[in-house]
Image (cartoon, rainbow, N blue to C red):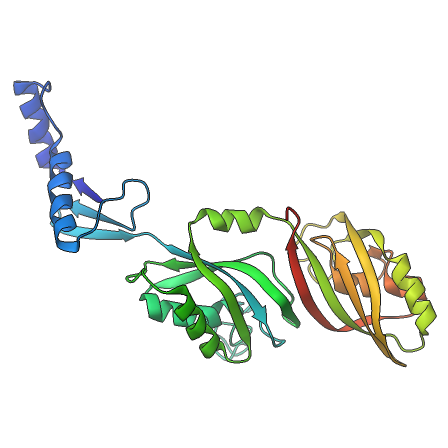
Length: 317
């Protein structure tokens, strides 16, 4: 698609001509320029014009004698699995220097050296010759949690791509080779920008595998405790996120809490719950901010030692 800025003097002369000759059969000069330039570009590139969502808008500024290109972002949908702990979903800028670089972050500007976002983006930027990316995930897991199962839905916005016709299967292979054993992507496909709004507005129920420390708690007591936390949970904003979240009491539901394995001082449980439930606090109680909690139900201090997200399911499915 072509657009034109005729410039002050040219526009004034055009208006004077209209005043003299009338506008009955007149056509704006920029419309003529847009059409003729568009025809030439179509002839050279063998591309048809798209008036609704053009990949590229060519803007002619006649007064400045310049040409600007406005390149529409491309959007890639997929699912990712995070197979290691200690990696955030998106780049986490240093809280001390806000990304500028300081001693605390070893002058990297980041709290963690890499993220799911950055690992996926590198091969995409290279393949599509893009200026950068923006990552849109369907929620996020904690830095110390793994994302397993079929993965978490995401959309990667690819900014100013100079190459758009990319085989998603080949791109998926390149990303997985680059990420090694840290992150795996699947189901990649190109979508429109509406998909970002769709995955952001959707609610997702979760399933977790939680390893807990439960020294001094026997198996039967633990099973009764899991029964006690199944149902409606009242959760005040956890203390660990209170600095960035509104201090509210939220009701969330635990659909099931099942004991998977048990040993003398630890256990693995599977929890299926409503979107927005803080699982670590469901176990620990967060000093009474989450009621009921597993610690309260078994009458002992119980804490999460490892957390894995094993399913992310849209509520509407």
